[in-house]
Amino acid sequence: MTRVLDVARIQLVHWPTLLAYPLILLAAMPLLGWGIDISNGETAAAAHEIYLLPAMWGLIAPAHLQTMTQIFPFTLGLGVTRRTFAAATALVVLGQALLLGLGLTAFDAVERLTGGWGRHARIFGLDVFGHGDPLTRWLVYSGPLIAVSAIAVVAGVVFQRWRQNGIYLTVFAAALLLAGAKALVTAQRWWPSIGGFLSGQPSLALFTAYPVVFALALGGAAWLVLRRATA
Image 1: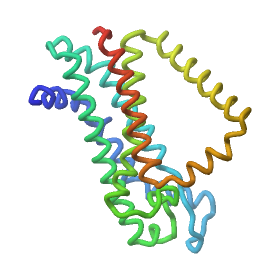
Image 2: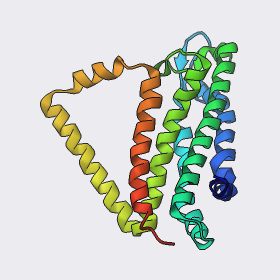
Image 3: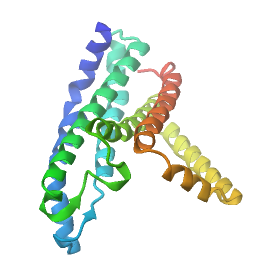
């Protein structure tokens, strides 16, 4: 475990992209929302939602790409095993998601106390997340961050193993898979059933359980590739 913590500390060398930039974006979201309201002509009396959280999800991805393409070769040169590096990466991903999720929960509480930043705006307390207790909301905010981080880790591992060709082929295969799935669902007329199933799921399942399962599946795939990746 000590070795894993040591490697995790090495991964924190690019702490600005891991934590600083996401926290700066988090602090700036109320101001960005205010600017969007002004441009859209929203009035203080109208309750409305502003969808800025996907920007947070996109911002955390580069850090994990850097981990796999820059830190991984460096640690291999230090004699770190792939298993130790994978465990450290999982620890960093989890720690980052929980910390940022805690920040999002805190800003959600402030948003509620201020009546939507004084203008009935909901940036953090979106209806789709439900209205659970603070612990539930913490987990709901953290789940998507873990899933996005897992996608970035897989992309980094694929690049480290097969370079640009691997990325192109992976994107092409993913696009074909999604297109095939869409065509199948449309042909079978499953969209209403899928919509009904998703609408009946609690927010903790939609935004925590399913993303974590998805991340674990990607993590397993990343490990299979990482075992053969070289510096």
